[in-house]
Length: 85
Image (cartoon, rainbow, N blue to C red; front, side, top):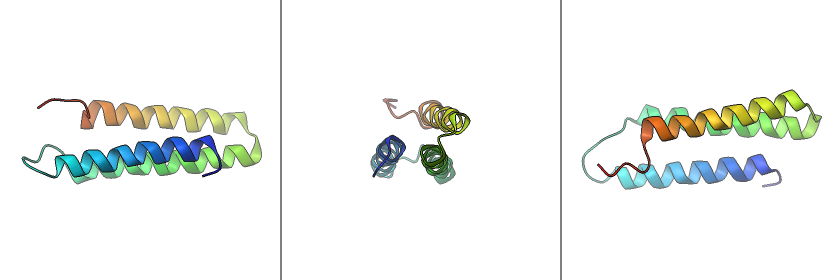
């Protein structure tokens, strides 16, 4: 837990875990592959972000930020964490 990417992706992943555990009780609304996609998005974001921190490449930082925003967008749009249904 040395970089901002570590903190952001671990927090997002922890949120995914809580959402998965909460939704595993009762009527199934999601598929496991949806959580896998979001988890891989967090892992790849963390890897690219950490490589950007080591190398100082601005393009890698941009790619990591865009991938993180895309991952959060996927979670928001597909998994709908604040949906009351």
